[in-house]
Image (cartoon, rainbow, N blue to C red; front, side, top):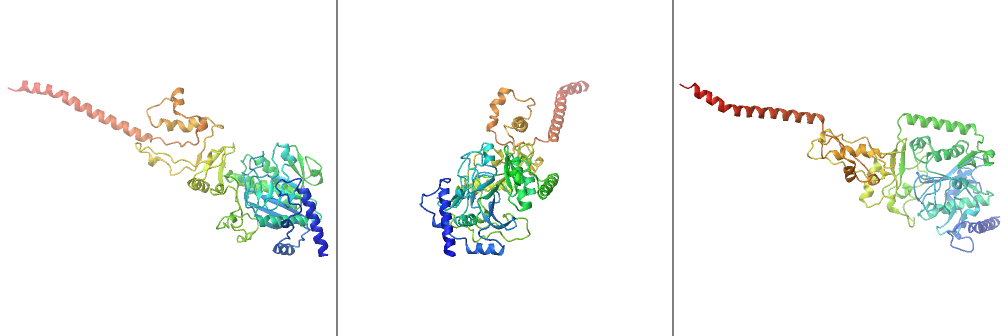
Length: 499
């Protein structure tokens, strides 16, 4: 029986290889499945399956989250519902939060993908790998381009989800056993972050929020029912549900439990917004990495499934910074992500004194160059200059709560508002604005301007005091002059009065 099972696995692996070489281009060209692709599932993981009532041959489903840098493997029970098997830390992903839009943008994809045996590569140059299947029908409808977006070993990413070699070996083995057990394909769900109400409120003003709300519909279906959502396409959007969604209906029936969860989350979002929860956008130099790979491990930075347990979903010692291979662009990981507050109109507002700003300064001190970005707030704010001749230091606030960032493309008039007083401070007596020619000579082109710090003019009271002092001094001088002019006349009168 054991020999028969081993033979079946070998034939299945050979079949996977034949299909994969037609789909993946990172193979080494070995004639036959590599030994690493045939390695059994680790004994401790098999034991974990047994404690959860799972079989190695049970179907699987995988979910991944960029911001948290975590990948979940789920297994389906006999009742058709999925249960979480294990969470794995992602060693490296590149780009920013948001979908992949074009080939070469270093973006890891976001969406719902179908992984077939043909997308598995047992002879990958990155130890082992499987292709996510990007672009899918929704990606193509949105004009997104790219290919060979993989989940692979070796901690290096240029648009892929990079795991450690040991991690991809285990995930690959779990998927292989599911295929051998009869599963024809498994669903791969890729998200920017965990689709909680708190995160949806936090990222409500991000340019990608419409797309992320669409992804949340599929996430809500899975989390409410623990069933794999059938995925369809309607125009440029996903539709989720049962057989009607798979058939292409643009308005599939929504299960009551799914609708209840969505409504509950929407209510929570509204409450958070009403309480003043800030809306932010997270900016990366180039993607991220799970903090378990950074010594010492930051145990407070891990995602939670909503439970009260404080134990990490994975052992920090097991995933410490060792045997990672060539980590891609490690200098971009030094500064860490920056949270930039975003207004409802899409303008960015930097939180003064926030930790991300400190991280950016620390990265700049280490020589870390910021990645190209259109967000002006990705730069370090200059300290405002105080003119020593004007004693206005006491009138300046300690620190503004927020610093507005001028956007030349979005609001050119902001430069006039912010810079008008700045350029007038050298000549307080100048009341009229400079002529267009003079302004052109003084003000750089708006595109080159990054930030403006509005200085506080001298107190009006100080001006009034100066004027009053000048008047008093002028009157005193006039009296002194009058007395000087009257002295000769007084002397003549005194001479005449003498006998």
